[in-house]
Structures are given as structure tokens and as C-alpha cells.
Image 1 (cartoon, rainbow, N blue to C red):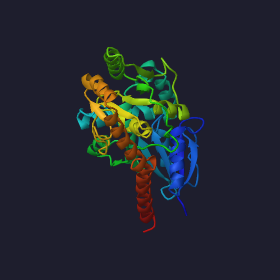
Image 2: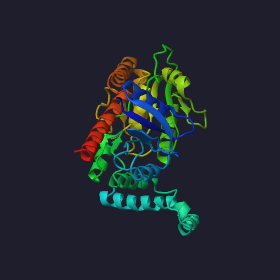
Image 3: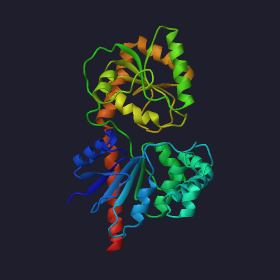
Image 4: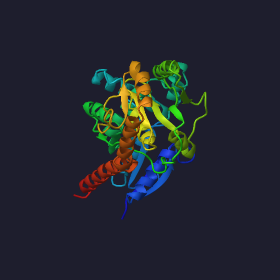
Length: 354
């Protein structure tokens, strides 16, 4: 009998990611269903599958704690968010994370005294800060409470980070979603495309710098940042990427894994991905074979080179396309996670019924 898996939806209707994960689960012969993050976990499920997070995850820990071990579904979480600066001492990151997570749990305590405390401006302000540390503490607490069965990262670097903290973590690579790419045969009439949100001053400053440097050579970046041009999704996004010779990827912070989340979508539409130097979040990505990376002060020069060398640009774009459409589809990461879920369920059931 196929495992029943409840996939979280962070929005009133399942978003693109939830739908894609559900579709991959179906293709892997599981029985997926959806549940809203702010509602009760559906009964009679073998596992729940959460991701991101795009909201608080502590409610899942609290719900699972109240379910007897014999009936408790396995919980798999696929994290897309970056941790605190990975240069910080691991003990400091864990200690701050545990404290930040403990403060967050006060939101769920039914107490008039604590409720009044939570309304204090200082506490409310703190509750909106140090989110990256809270993620660390939330996952640590969930594992300590035996609620979180499988914790997965889209980055090998981040998986190593969490394993070094003592939180067992698996690496499940992110991949391209079904229906998010097509070879439309359009004219590549956009020299350089940038799609995203500026998010941080680091990224915004680098985008403006490269834009200015390219403008000196008569090259324009077509910017879709939700300000100059409204965001694009679905078929409109696919069409836009199909028109680009080069799509620029810029990190929000030096250690961010944004490239692994962006690369599959862009490369699957046969455009060359050019990025500032990134850590080896996905060891399969090889610079100047699947994409082109350079220091920020060399990015404009790199872009100009590949705009002037069509055959080299198209060859790398083709390599990137083959990598993501043959080896890095979304189903690969989902399969890695579900294999770990099945192992966890098998172990827990054998302990309950030795």
C-alpha cells in the first residue's frame, strides 16, 4: 500500500512548490494530499512533508508531540533558507538558536501573564528578528522532541553546517520542476536578464554596479525585480528566459545558496547562467562547464566575453540544460527525502513492534 503523505501549503491555495512536490510524490507512487500550515495535521497520514519555511514550523512540533508514538506520522522538512553566517562558532550559533526558538515557543503558551509579555513592544520586536537563528533552534528542538524524522537541505554546505551542530541532516538537491521549462525556439533578443528581488543591500549594490559597468559598453540588463517591472511566473517567465542569452544570478549574501535554487529553472530554458562566485552548495555544478562564475568585479567582463563568443556561450548553456533535465529534476531530491522517510518509519515501527 502506498505511503500517504500530507504536503504543507503555506498559502490559501497550494503554491507552485507545494504542487510540484505533490506531483513528484505521485510519480514516485505515494499518495499525496495537502494541509494548511495553520490547521490540524490530517489523520491517518504516514508522513507530512514541509519545506522552506515560509512561516513558523513550531506548530508542527507541538502537534506531533501530542500524537502517540504508535500513530505519529514521520515528519520530513526540506529547508530552503540559509543559516546564520557559517563563519560564526558553531556553539554560538546553536546557543543563540536555542534561545531564539525558546522565545518563539512562548507564543504558543496559554497563560495570561505570558500573553501580556508577548504584547510588549520589545518582545514583539525580538520576535521579528534573528530569524536565521530561530531556524537553527526550531529544527534542533524538533529533533530533540523526536518530532522531526528527516531534515534535508538543498545545499551540501548547509547540510555539513547542521551536521557539525549535531543535527543529523541529509543533502537533497533542488531540481527543475515539471512544466517550468520549454524550448520555444524564440529569438534571443535579450542580452542579459535578471529576475528576482533585491532582498539585501549586498545584492542590490552588486546589481547596480554590474548594470553600470555594462552600460558603459552599450549592454543593458533587463531587470525584473518587482519594482521596475512586475514579477513574472509560469509560462510568461519561461518565455522571458527563452529570450535571454545570459541570465544573471547574484547572491544575497556571500554564502547564500540562491544559485542552486535559481540555476535549474534558468539552465533548463537553455540560457547561460552567469553568477558571482558561490560556495559548492551543489557539487555537480562545474564553473565554465555548466555555468560561468566570477568575482563581482569581473562579472561585467565575463558577461561581455560570452556575449561576444556565441559558440562558447551556447555550449555551456547546453551542458547546463542537460545537467538539470537529465540529472537534477525535482523528483531526485524528493526521492532522496522519501527514502529517508521510509527508513525512519521502518525503524520506528520495528521499535514499537519488536
